[in-house]
Image (tube, rainbow, N blue to C red; front, side, top):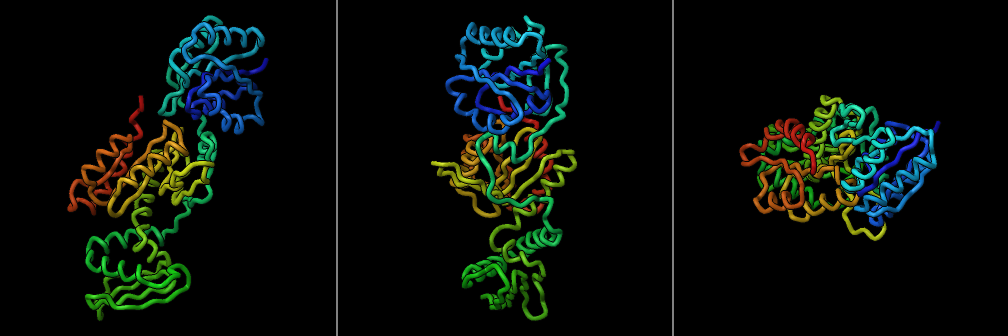
Length: 373
């Protein structure tokens, strides 16, 4: 007896892929529409080596046609074990296929956005045992990555330096602005075993060798770090990315989530696509991705459009785009985020910025519990 699945197909493939992993069929039957058929290629490429795959073109609202196709599949494979995955496609597709499943005594399942599946046998919600890796998730939507760093591999020296930079900026903002301006005027290269020394307008001395950094005036030391990524962290804005990555990683562990967290993610460009192909943090939240853009300075409309485009191009509709800002956001940016379905995290007032990051875990809890309709 062969294990088989009949699957209604829409625009999202994470629940389809999870259903395949969870129930391990040997053959699958995809009920596709004219619109969804071209989108199936990545899924077929991902699972096609292990499974027999058959496609059937149906109308998205053709009740009789969908029922007829399902009846035909069951008749041609009499005696096999069938599961109907009705998680995707139009409601009419799900109702039509579900009616056939019920008439033939087959199990029909629906996979939820929060890691559970429900079937038509007992309607009890059961936790999924399967998950999707970052790589497979991206492949489902025709994407892949050229470059990334796993947050788990971040060095404690770099993380501690990022928090040190944050504290320095909050305590000595004027010195930070002068130092940043000085650094950006330096001749290239700014990465490698270089040495520069200079004097800031306020009389402070500043030295950097191979990325380490010291800022002092006489015997008064304002900043001193042997971390070789210190200049990159402070002057290129990476300190906020690392701080956010560290907080998100702690939250991820406490939630007992199994997927990886990547930062500095650069996607391979898709042909004919003009989307800026990078995101600061990519978080695996069981069966969807959280794409997080971290901004330590001014947030522009282009930043909001970028993360919205990245989500639509490289992830699925179930994925969420998040903007995590160190500074308060202007009303126009908040409205743009709301219009595009982007969740934003930012202090309301400048006076709150130093401790606002402590609220990020609870905010993330609330975001992942929200279900898109």
